[in-house]
Amino acid sequence: MSDLRAEHRNEENRFCGHGSSERAIEAYERAIDYDFEAAAQSFDFGPVNKWGFVDDPKRFGFLISRHKFVSKMLDGKKNVLDIGCQEGLGTMIVSKAVARITGVDFFAAHVESANKGIRPVAPNAEFFGHDIIGGPVAGEFDAAYSMDVFEHIDPAQCDRYMKNIIASLTADGVFIVGIPSLESQAFASPASREGHINCRTGADLRDFCREYFGNVFMFGMNDEVVHTGFFPMCHYLIAVCVGPKSP
Image (cartoon, rainbow, N blue to C red; front, side, top):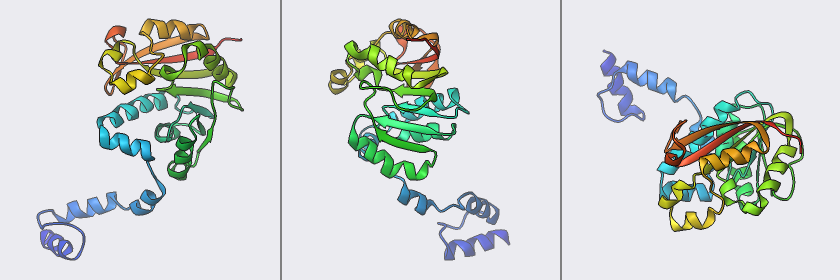
C-alpha cells in the first residue's frame, strides 16, 4: 500500500518515476523543507568565482578545504579579520565558526561582489575596501588570516604587511597565512607565476613569521589534504602564528 501511495504522489508532484517507497519520499521531503529559491536569489558567487568554477571546478575543493582549516583553528573567536577576502566565499565559510568577521580587499570590484552576493547570507560578516600595505585595519581583532595573498606582496613590503596586521590584533591574537610553496611554482601556469612574486619555501615562511610572532606552527597541503609533511613536497604552506611580538 505504501508503494501505491508513492506512485500516486509521483504522478501529482515533483518526483520522477515510481520505484521509491513512501517512506523514502517522505524522508527526502523533510530533508529539503527549506526555501532554497529565496536563498539562491540572495546569494551570488561573484564573477571571478563563477569563472573559476567553470574553468577548473576542483580549485573550489582547495579553497573550501583551506578555509575549513582556518575555521577550525579560529573556532569561537569573537572578532576575525580576513585580509584579501576577494569575493567573500572563504569569508562565508569561516563566518560559520566565529562571532563576527570582517573581510577586506584592495580591489574594489571584489568588495562590491562580496557585499552583493555574500553579506546577505552571512549576517555576521561585513566587507570593505582596504590596502593592508597602506595601514592597519581599524579595530581590535582576536584573530586574522590571509590566504593566497602573501605570494602577491612585493618582497620589499613584507615587513609593512606583517606590522600592519599585528597592529590590528589584540596582544594574544592569532594570525594564519597561507601561500603556494616555492617548489609548487614549477607546476604553476604562466599567469600564476607572473603574479606569484613572493612564494617561499616552508623553512623561509616559518623563519619569516617567527620574526613577528612568538610561536609559529607549520602545516603543508596537497590538494584538499592538510598535513605536517616534508616541506619541499608541499604544494601549499600554512603558518599558524600565535603571540604577536611588540614592534
